[in-house]
Image (tube, rainbow over all chains, first blue to last red; front, side, top):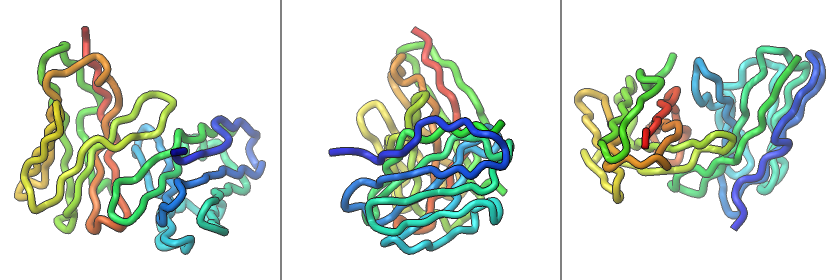
Length: 112
Length: 112
């Protein structure tokens, strides 16, 4: 069974550019989460969806960040325009019911 | 503000000895706690969980203890093995179907 799939694994881009991170959750999972990992704050929840509907986006740092889940098998996290302080590892996780979350291997984002 | 805290960024233990990783939380509404293990360049993977109706949960070499009055939980690994070397994240939720709050992680090194 395939796990959570994130792409790209690495992204290096210049400040001001648009960045789009992608996630394919595990089939049958009805909740999807986007996290950002930094040394200072650990794993921060950015936004999560239940049944494709955004439930809580209070963790999204600012309006430059947006997330969508157009269907049960795909989600995107977009940063526009990107800034150097957005550099981090971004994780997507999915979950079914009350089961623990399953994480993807992350996207390492570097903004120059 | 961090609702889940792991105050030890790193820990080194000799192979065969016990590893004890600690986690504190501030929200008395948290009723479900998990530990995740993370290897470099991979996403976190679920290790063990405990609900607030218990004070201990054991799975092989891994035991999680919960002290609700102190708002503290710990993960015991015994005996520790070199393959246990990883970053361990503590997470908590006020609703098993809801969002999870993660600590900043503790990097465990088991010395052969």
